[in-house]
Length: 240
Ligand code: F6R
Image (cartoon, rainbow, N blue to C red):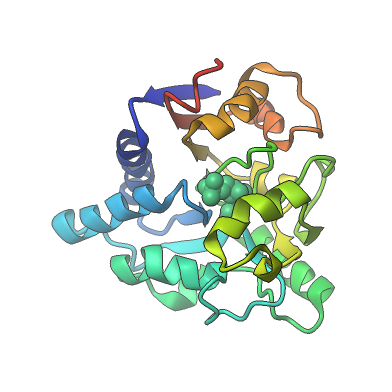
């Protein structure tokens, strides 16, 4: 596990974007595993800037996202499909047919998980972007999720609902469930890059990097992956 500590969020975002862009340049047909949330927004902005200034092409790139809220359609402004369009896809001229997220409004949620797992078997992520939950979750794999898990329906924990409520008008509007890639789907990526910032993540960063590998802190499993880079700002790294 390689840990890069940056001065602040801006530097973290630049560094992470550089790493992702070099994967795209080396393999224009690559598969990017993507995350939503506050952590990667700056990374995505740097990718858009690079696309505009240097012409890095996403024409043949495909993407698979980690997760989606249950009950929100792709055009709902809090859905992760909407987030990805607004924060990345529309800025890099990617073919939307090559972008994939679990569908949170599917009638049969288990069938949707099965579809997504089958898709992931055909799309190994060349690089998987991750954020880190303050409780150590990756994707929406909350503490206690087995390491062998694949895409599944998740009951979000109170702490995650509370963390995510900042983006909604009220906590009551935050969906209680999500569809998430499992830990096994994440670990299949050829390389993983995590972006983390802020003091509220410091405890989880410490456990992930220095603690024992335990389902109680799902991100600790990344210690077992051969090619992981954590890019974190100095606040998130403050307990290392
Ligand atoms: C998002 C995701 C989550 C977030 C995590 C951190 O697709 O899978 O695991 O990465 O909750 O969220 P932020 O970056 O908003 O602190």
